[in-house]
Length: 91
Image (cartoon, rainbow, N blue to C red; front, side, top):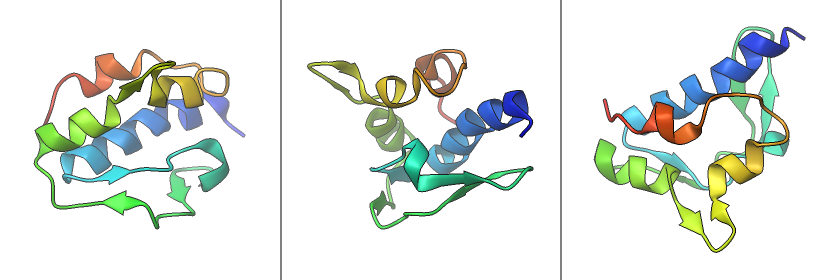
């Protein structure tokens, strides 16, 4: 697997979903598969749609008592710049 393109594509996928006003509640490695060119979401049952980009951005940047949820799920799996740097700009 071409690891770097796959890793970079994770945040691109998140930005695309966010820009469509959506959030995938269970966006984690076990629910994705790399086709060699793009990520495919296997479990889309928890997708929330119909939000503004700003509302979707807030969902992706959720923080709980352990810290940023997205970064915590991916920190050990995907070496990438901080999710907040990519998601900090809507649109």
